[in-house]
Amino acid sequence: MVGNDTHAAKQGQKRAVEVLTSDEVRALTRGCSTRAPTGIRNRALITVMYRGGLRVDEALSLKPSDIDPKTGTIRILHGKGDKARVVAIDDGAMATIQRWIDARRKLGIRNGRLFCTLQGGEVQAVYVRNLMKRLAAKAGIDKRVHPHGLRHTHAAELAMEGVPVHVIQKQLGHASLAVTDRYLNHVMPADVVAMGRSRERWEP
Image 1 (tube, rainbow, N blue to C red):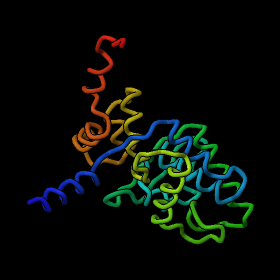
Image 2 (image 1 turned 120 degrees about the vertical axis):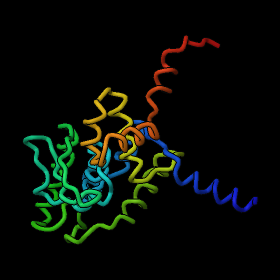
Image 3 (image 1 turned 180 degrees about the vertical axis):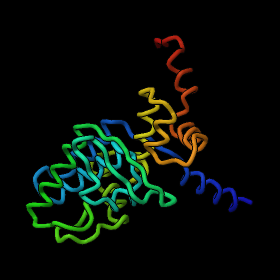
Image 4 (image 1 turned 90 degrees about the vertical axis):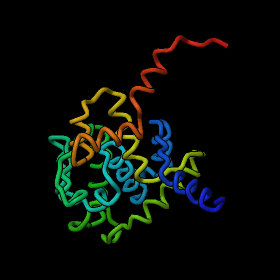
């Protein structure tokens, strides 16, 4: 019985959601070089997942032609369930992505995936997961930091900013509003947050 309880506890830990603060995400990006091509690429990759709410596989499947700086959008052709969608991204994030596109061009890379190796090869998801761990350790972040956590953080921020649920649904690529509602309740329970902010200020 104890063994089953231990296993259940571990399963619960795996499902635990830890949302990062904007300062913590900035600390991750600061751990990437602003001059070396690899650092510029990694900054852009983290930015795409954080500011666009993309899954790691969606980000790694992007091509340069999927980025539209004029409209501030990113096209995802094969999301979960092989569904396509368009997500919005802010100007600052787009500028970070554009810096990598420019660096990529200078390296002579013309085709293939947007986020590629310096030789134009594919970047694997395991690399991104290990990268996040290294950057978190470097930044002294005690939370469990992983690619999907950036998507959680994006969703939580949109909810806190008052973005309508149906818009968040489209941004995240969820199949229904019910899925988005459950997702948001998991990462940012609005009623609990509202209750906490409405309570009388405590002065010790």
